[in-house]
Image 1: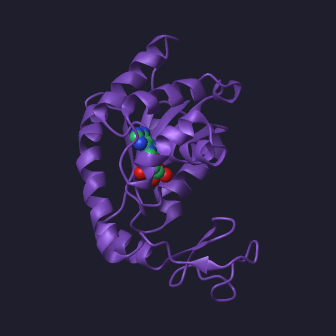
Image 2 (image 1 turned 180 degrees about the vertical axis):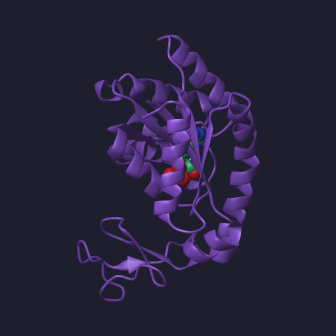
Length: 218
Ligand code: AMP
């Protein structure tokens, strides 16, 4: 199964991706994570990508596309994968089509996690993340047992600097601008499977699983 997952920052996309990865034994390919790994390891790719990422800009398409093509040739992708953070625009979507066509394959479905802006705003501005292990908590909906302390590793939980109201509004606007054309692109092919995450993660996952089954994917 070859999936793409789309969803706004704070939509709950990460949670859905994790469930799908487990359920269908997929490799989870997050371009943001791949860039962060390359930056940490100071590879030539990481050094090139860092300047863009630090400015909040997108890394150039040719660099990103090469990285994804390389990653898709790894053995763990043979059983299927879920692409997270890629494609981010139509040029990348077309490049993905081309690289898959070389092996006679194609994307099976595009999972679209939909959450209303006011709910995202509420969830993201109350989110806390562990400085040490990255685990995510929420002061309103999923507080850590001891305030400010990670349940998993004992590290400090903090509010990300970009999880404030003004920045979240900007991130949402950027996301919509870039993503709507992609939704249209895949909708035209009948590949969009929607999960509504306004209520809770279980309801969202259930509708995604039903949508995938309706496309014959199990
Ligand atoms: P993310 O973790 O998905 O929010 O990505 C973090 C950063 O990595 C983004 O702000 C971009 O600078 C870069 N990035 C991730 N995915 C892509 C992509 N598909 N195209 C270009 N840049 C990307």
